[in-house]
Length: 83
Image: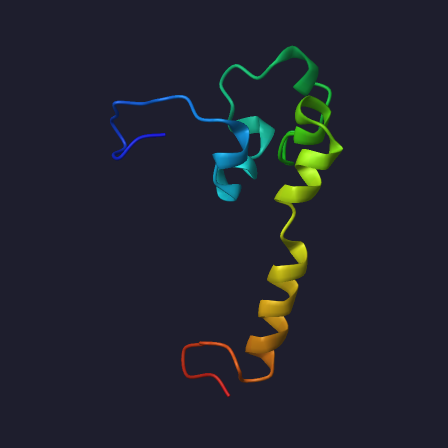
């Protein structure tokens, strides 16, 4: 974590890592851990294998994203002038 892109950097616990960072595909890691190399390089790492299923389940926000998409589709979201 850092206030700026050029640091200084500090280490944070995994639960504080922003979800977009966790979704970076394996192919973008310059030196991925050896066990990642067997995974699809276009997919994000399988964090549950390192941090446990319970941790991964807490990081899943698909339900919220899906609800937001439904709201926007029905005209209740903050779109850009669409319906």
